[in-house]
Length: 153
Length: 108
Image (cartoon, rainbow over all chains, first blue to last red; front, top):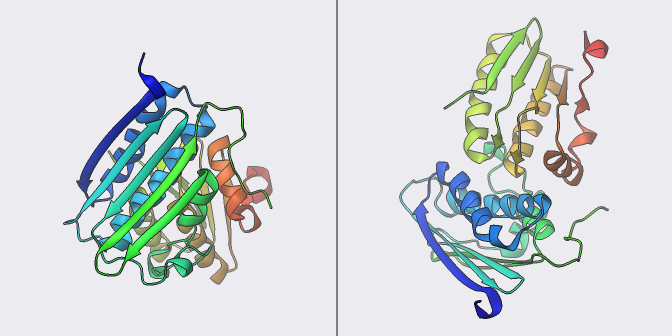
């Protein structure tokens, strides 16, 4: 028996929209040994999908050239997901995280991406440097008897 | 692999969605739907979610976009067949304020 149920998985993939589905399925597969509920799996898939879509659509402006990186870590019941890119970065992270804010309304973006990451995961932090890239770090506790976070208001 | 089906009947278009409604599929659905809206006098769009198992915020964008188009022509957007995962997304995003649950008898 491993101590602490520690595990790490790293993936890098081309910034094309086909890989959004790949990334969220890989993240779901990573958490499977923890026997998550269907709702927890759905939470993780949605949050990963939002972060990866942001990297592809905003970070790399859909240039299909850059690489998106996903690191999944397990430390006991705590799962950490880090999605990063070497794209354009975000000038104003605070503004980008506001519900309904989008820099691409012409592409029918709803501006709900970060709100969903926040709602479906336990913690979310965003580090970004214009011209260098963006790193999204999310954690979620799985297998505990605590209800997953949600906003009902 | 593309199997979203678009069914136009008079002024109503039904979009039968596939399993996943993410950014990747949203781009295709938007292009197809816009093509039909340009070509036919559509004032009602119905999204069939019966097969959808996954939707993220890109799906919200698709629905809001169609809602705006239908608003311009005094029309409406309906949804049906929504499962629990998608229902949470609809609730959280407030989409139920702009789209109605489809009841065939009510529309026809």
